Amino acid sequence: MRPKDRMLAALDRCEPDRLPATTHHVMDYFLDTYLNGVSCQEFFDMFGLDPVLWTLPLAPDPERGQSSVDLPAGFLGSVHLMTDEWRVQIDRLPHDRYNTERVSFATPVGTLSMVLQSNQHTTWVTEHLVKRKEDIEIIARYCPSPKCDVSAVMASAETFGDRGLVRGHIPGFDFWGQPGCWQDATCLVGTEELILATFDDAMWVHELLHILQGMKLTFVDSLAGAPYDLLELGGGAASSTVISPRIFDRFVAPYDAPLIERSHAAGQRIVYHTCGGMMPLLERIADMRPDAMETLTPPAMGGDVDLSEVKRRIGDRVCLIGGFDQFHYFLGCTPDATRREVRRCFEAAGSGGGFILAPSDHFFDADVRLIQAFADEAQSCTY
Image (cartoon, rainbow, N blue to C red; front, side, top):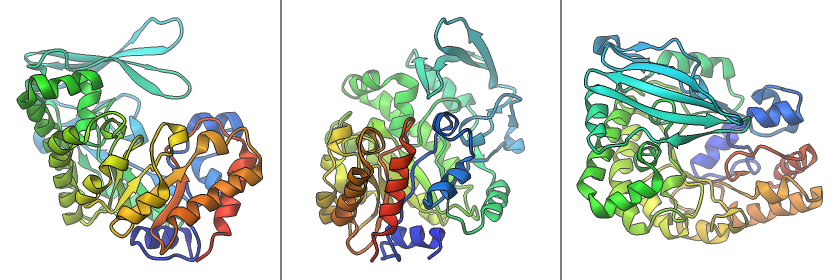
């Protein structure tokens, strides 16, 4: 089978010719440090893995006064949007170790801002955007909601052809956010602060989640005709190692489940991403009716996933993606140990199809010999 057909068969919970094997985002740091800067697609070809093309072109809506900002592109090349009442500015701040920037959004009633830091690996937030409860009213009134640039997705998919899956995600808040509503809110408010607010002012949390859901629905409702194979929703802040099932039931599922339903209505598949604990939430996530679930993080990486148990409990409802421990089997072990781990994952979750082997989220450092062992052993796991 061609890689695309192999992974689509797994997404449909059918048996492909062999175990599909891919990875989440291929990080530039890894490509530059270990492979002399080859491209992402050259990485897939080099190891014989099933390719994924990530793309998220966003389109401003001129009818709503939106235009793109002349600033470096965001995650996956997405554009930044502005209007006359939502003006974006980036200011470099001095720091002796990290690249530090203040991102400001000027509106007629005041300016909101957040501070981001980054190194060669990743970016993180050091000052959250929402500092007062009334700040969310400014977001609701003035923040532009992006739409999908369907023609750009079509062009990318046509160039990519049948090499593999075309993936994207439901957009998070501009410059720093996550696809899921709760997860996006944690980026704006702070994880601990948002959890405490569910006890202290639940109505305010619901108001914020409703605002973010509305922005995401604008994107979802523009997806008709976009040739995505899979779109990501969720994020680690809704894992059971961060929040309780009770919070999930009250503040996550009611906002993300409608996004999945509307995505299906637009002809799109959804994978729900939970990098962290999942076992107490398995059925709750499956009840939202995503087409797939990831990342199936094992205990040795800080998660709690027992692949065999996941397969038994929900394997007939969703495709499973991930499950591989890249911390311990892409570094510091023998190729034979990596092969055994691949085989273990296949035996635990591969029965009947519906399983795509992948590292549990992205990685930065890896021994290229072990990546090759990962790919080679997956090719020998046949149905």
